[in-house]
Length: 602
Image (cartoon, rainbow, N blue to C red):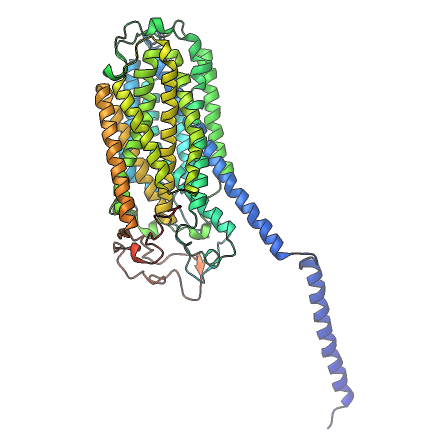
């Protein structure tokens, strides 16, 4: 039985109608969710990365402001409280039965001794385990919190925690007792190295992110591969300069409580310096003969509470700045669970990095950096400045230092055009000349005619400090471009600096000539070691870098999906190797050998 041909014609019409209907639906869908006719993809992409670059600049400025507020509040409160507690009458009237002088000694001990152990715990607080994704990886970050990569603090949250501990120290001064002051001082000691190590690592990482957002069309950026050596150096120079220009203003901010509050209660220099016989290079210890009563009237408790509340508000503002304005240092896809790397490896890696001769040759420079900043705040400002001009001029002397250091931090920008050795050696030369001058000079007590020379020395010392600190941070950012190493490197730097500050605390009873001789010798060794390092780099001497271990066990859940199972051990090609293996030359690969270390940007 044959079918009617009209049936086939009806079926064909039906299929054609369905096809036209599908095409119409797609056209309507494109009208609703498709791009507008005037949409320019390249222009929108440019706008997107411009916003990203502005976000990086915002992060740098926010971190710089937070560091300035935090250190300014800490120094200002500590200086004001030590002056108040030094006064005999103040101690007897307000705290006769709690031995405040002994508490102050233990507070200073807690602040200066505790950082000695910081090398053991700081990398754990900062470590993200950031590594670039393998080429061709499709990175997906689930929206469910339980499936996101697990992490332990990290750079931003370590900064926030440390700033919070500084705020805790401020709050403990509302009720000055042994059980409030000493534990908070120990907490400050615990937080010192993590704070400044996270700041240094954060600023360097922001420079690298800015480079990525500027060069977003480059193939190595799109595939999240390592940038060419030296590509980020210009941004490291600029961002570290901005940070230290802001940070050195903390020495100015720290003088506000003394300048606007405490100076109204201080005796003049004829009273406070009555028993002082020798100043400067002839002095021993910390200003011997200084009068035990420095306050002509005692400040009211309500006034002290107002000042401390203002400082507390500034510390709380610093916390908010870090929390709200500072973005994360790493992408979510760069995070690796610390437990997958192994806690033992995290503890060992700072010590393993010491095998790198570049870092070893910089140790004397790190130590001198700690010596000079505490010397200017104690040895120079007290045994030279206060001894000649009186305690009421201490704030002005340190403000001259702070303003000079902030302004002269911009001199580090010459690294954009000149060799990187020049700013560092210029700062060392300035300090060497000043140390020789101080070694040969003993100002007369209560002799105000010497004020211009003392202010000039403070300004020049600020210039040397700015060149020293800014150049060291820039140099570390240039030498160690791998973001997974920066936390360890800045931890080592600030740990050695903390050890140097502890040494200055111990030598407080030495003659001034001995202190100056130690500093001058350390500076000479530091310059010699640094020049020898640069010579070895110019000769392309290979350096040893420890290998950053990869995860050794199978991860639960998923983070990175690719054709092969990236969560399996050995999926990145090195899982079967021993985690303790070193790359005797991460150095020997073409992009690790410092071929351009002698060039302008290093």
